[in-house]
Image (cartoon, rainbow, N blue to C red; front, top):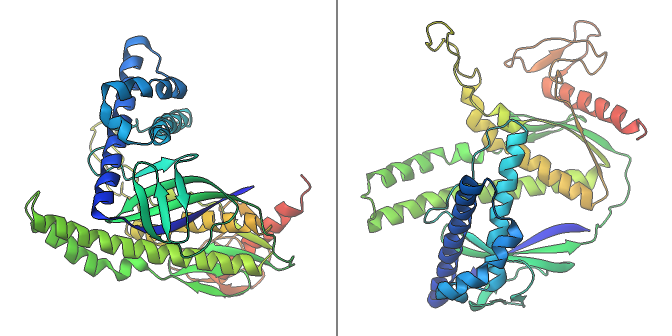
Length: 386
């Protein structure tokens, strides 16, 4: 069974919006209280309460705080689940020696969704009924599939959405022997091993001037004023437009590739590490920062984030799984340097966009050569019996 989400726009009345925002604020308060309880108990006893223990104490909290009764019980229970997941992620990062980032308290406006995990909601042709909220008008632009498991209500840029997570069966596409290797980049979004290219739309770069103008206007407004709220909403709309366009591009591109190819080879890029600027190095004796400590590709960080390689690979993998296609990830080491024809290493600078092998004489676009090499490695990995 696979999970698939369906997102519908909600149009609540002013009274319903008030209830929705009160629910978010109540959930935020419960989240912070549960987080504080875990922190204090650990400092006192060396042990934090478990998820079930915190869920079981919610009825007692309701007696002491009547406003909690205005929120559906399972929604409050899901808040405890979120706190537990935050700590699970924290300990996982600690074990991997990553920057752990202890779970933080949620400030005003930072808690933007609540979830009905099992019941308390009903989806119809043009409405969504939510327990303790009422029947909300909605644009149900397509029918859901499979069995609806959860409903998450989210606010984004002042707009309300209902996201339904459904369990669906895989729908295999007709088998095909076509294979493709994909090399993602910045100049071109992706190069395919068959010589085709997918152009980089650069959604953020195209909106930079409008975004900078809106942000400058926001900075000039007085804190807490009506004009500042209006300017902040304008900035949010630009970010929302960029996000929606990128989302649409990634999904449509992934769908076309999955429909066409049976085996898809991609690089296992650590995009977070690629776009992270390393800390400048210090002299061990003087403690002064050494020159050239900044990233050599610092100017590409924004372009790497704009390209959304991680999102593309995630969406591609999900669509391939539901269509019974095979996605093989390969080690990206030297895929931009090695020759896809003879395997010899031909070092190139980032500015060199053409591959010319000194050994076999292979001449083709650098990114196409990388895509062919990625496919060759993936075919070798896929052919090895498990």
